[in-house]
Length: 226
Image (cartoon, rainbow, N blue to C red):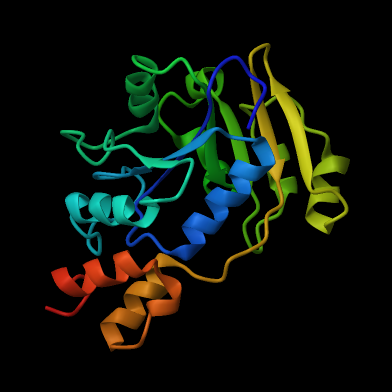
């Protein structure tokens, strides 16, 4: 746990369509790297950057997330995005959370998504409201982050060392109050799209999902052809 006078909280958003063991493993690595007191999972409602065609209803994805973290210390779930009345933007989520949380917030995000942050609503403001933990993604080099105009000049040599595996972590201040941490993590070769495809074809996914999530999907007949 951290020595901060505030609760050090990680925020991990996503569609979680469905949540799988890889999500939990990634959150665990983030928690350990930053000594987070807790990680809050935030299943999305209607995300602005993804098609909703193959998206299970938000109430199912929220319930599966609650099942997945039950009994796991330091993991909890928020319905702030799942129950939003309209399309949910990260800036709105953070402002809502800030109404009740004084925590030291760390937004956990994959490098591929972080590289698109300049297209997010109020991206410049977001970078002042919280810290960012940017996690490695397969075949996406950290050195691409140097091209983001929103960020201060990034040390190209150190980003390249991350890409080459010579350095695991890089902490960089943003302004006077926030930090971006770039972190190499152990990859987990499972994706929600692969889980959905295996369910669609009748293949076994028990090893990829928390048992309670697997049972929920079967019970509610999710991700099968209609």
